Amino acid sequence: MREDWNITLSVLESPDKSLIGQQKVFYSSPISIGRADNNDMIITDPAVSRNHTILRITNDYSRVFVTDMSTHGTEVSGKVVQKGGGTGFTIENGDTIKLGDTLLRYELHLKLSVQSTFVGKMDRSFLETPPSDMVAESEESVPEIEALETAEPLRKGFSPVSIGIIVVCLILMVYLVFFTK
Image 1 (cartoon, one colour):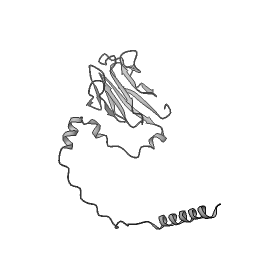
Image 2 (cartoon, rainbow, N blue to C red; image 1 turned 90 degrees about the vertical axis):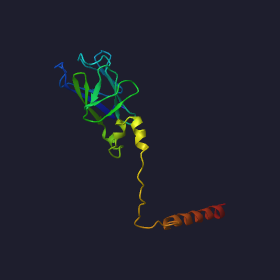
Image 3 (cartoon, rainbow, N blue to C red; image 1 turned 60 degrees about the horizontal axis):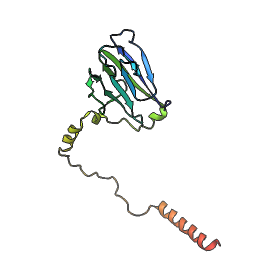
Image 4 (tube, rainbow, N blue to C red; image 1 turned 90 degrees about the horizontal axis):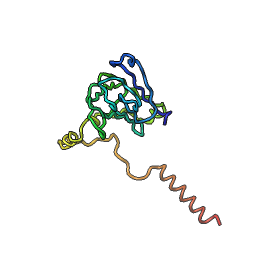
């Protein structure tokens, strides 16, 4: 929803000096960036492709992906983004996106109620590992896990509260069956 999030792209560097310092705020996804007039953000840099890159936010607002559709390449904070549809690279708040000779700063702003749904910061390092490398890592031997010692032995049976609830339910059932006619 428009009220839940917005993405701000700020131009930090560009051969077109009139673009430097400009910010554009987006409220819908996907966001197309390139030189052509049909893009959501138009960058007048000859090194930027007509339809250079696309940003997409996930339905739960937890991640934003950048997809490189260009012939010149896209970098996110110095890391090269793989080319083509179906590929993607997760970007985080404050990352820079380099398109040609233009450098953008990416910021995702979430409404406080949306932020509170995230329990903690997720480990996103797995998103940068190609699937073939992940398979190789999983085939390595896994160290044995030592059994955890508990401070108190586990109790077996019902707790006093559970027994009380059961007794009350039985008394109520007997009352309903025998005394309500």
